[in-house]
Length: 339
Image (cartoon, rainbow, N blue to C red; front, top):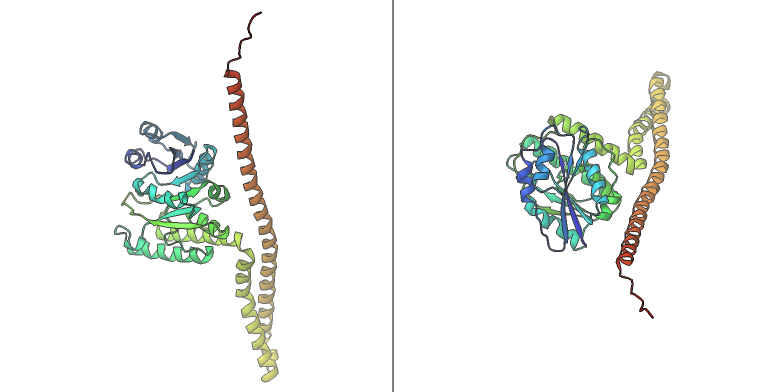
């Protein structure tokens, strides 16, 4: 039996939830069971009651608002615990069309991808400002370079995952999961596909307070994740920013000393060069240590993935054992013929 869980992070969305839930498909070819999971991020309105009244099968509620990334992780954990074979993540504000979910999961059902992203074709979205389009394009380009993927719309939250892909992703950001999951998927060699969708105009984003805030937070997320997964490269680039000027200043000092015979007048350049070289090589050594730590982290992530799979197999065995025991207990005992 193949199960799809549609998870919807929610914060004070009582007004938009009915329309969002109404659009979600109840039948998809290749899927036996479809269930809806609402992750209520400490809403202060009637979001939970509205969700239950309009067809949500499960509601997970946090006592206070924890942010989009934390709620996404909460939803993934809950979906896996509920036995999802495939997971779709969409927004509660009805930005993404629920009618596109069959197209979103199709590459997963065909075995062509581990993760599918709904591409909004940001450059053609009329209600996006020119500034937002440029920032989205720049951010997506940076994520493509860092992750080694070809994803065009890296900030789209309309996504589908296989169970194994969801188990392999470990979100550590406290701001947004969108960029981090793509970078992780690229580094872990997961197959990513995109399907075109249409994005609707909704209320202003609660995640992006301003363009500068969005750029600052997104850049911090990209740098942090890249440093986690490619620490030697990252610290080598940073170290090179000190080593190269140090070498240039050293050569400059040698030129004045050996060619022009004016070495004593440029001692400051030599001191600065030494400082830059020491800093550069120190940063490079930090990169070596971080690379060793990254190898340990990869082993831990693989161990965590294997543990999750082992626990699943154990749960299935226990469930089958209980079922067989119940069947034996319910099976009538044949009566012996009296002499």
